[in-house]
Length: 450
Image (cartoon, rainbow, N blue to C red; front, side):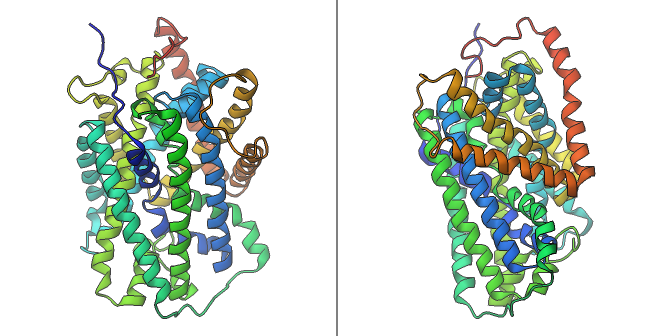
């Protein structure tokens, strides 16, 4: 009896919802404070946001061609497998399964609880609230992908409208910023890479949609368009929101907002709204922020569970994770295990720690993905490409150089975190050979990850 397969129930609307909804979560409300502490200047913060947005857009344009070329469930796992072989693909999937996806989900849940704390004082129960949120949406993601795709599209529309409305209201309100620069240009540039890394967390998620490509209708057309327009919309929303923060808040208030240095302070977005509209706005904004973070978490859950599913179908991970529910056509066990790991991380790590580990590990593979585009242009010149990366080869070259520069700067400024990231990836190597030995066939059959 054949195993049930995934269903292609995601259209362009749901795909854009996944892209935008997976990106816009907690970072736009929290990371500005950390970035201000790193560069010491409003101008430096805005420049870091723009650099991160441009880098993410270049990445999305690069991925758009890869997504059209390999419209299979697993996304980056499939691209790496085809470009470099199963070991590199396994290491990506290992890192994604154990670090990046559960770390991202945990960070979103902690962000949700942090925002809810502005409405109700959670005290020492913040982590428990984060775990409850993870559990609730893990259960939700065990239902059909059509249900969760429509839910994601609805959440995305609502939060884009809310954040856009907040940004417009801040920009039209009275300015009380008073400017503010507390660092020399030398200090700004020495920490600029760290600030860009912080901003990249807020943009992370543009790569999630291809992981669910096996459930997208006309993936060769829908995935490129969703990546392009979704990322551009997020860039516009983020720029507007941050201009609003700096318009109404003194720089000193932004420095003292919620971050690792000030864990009990209000988020920068809440401070900005409170300054512009008074204390009465805090409750409403806290609900809006919770809503936004939960939407990003839901998008990460929906797509992230498809990577271990694809690995299992290739015989490179626990076989049970490759099974699909006959009733919902969802890899339920993969979703459940992902939720358990995320809940554990929510209890163990801080928001900034989780995002830093996730970002460093992710960008190692983003750089490899840029190289993969050149490999496929050479190995598969006649392959059907519904979308081609514009300004080739210069755009992917610049994306690759920027990725490598960011990684080198992170190694220099955060050697401990970088070392931990490398070690966690390397730990997966013995696991690969164990799965290889137990698998009947290492080379996946055509379409096995569909």
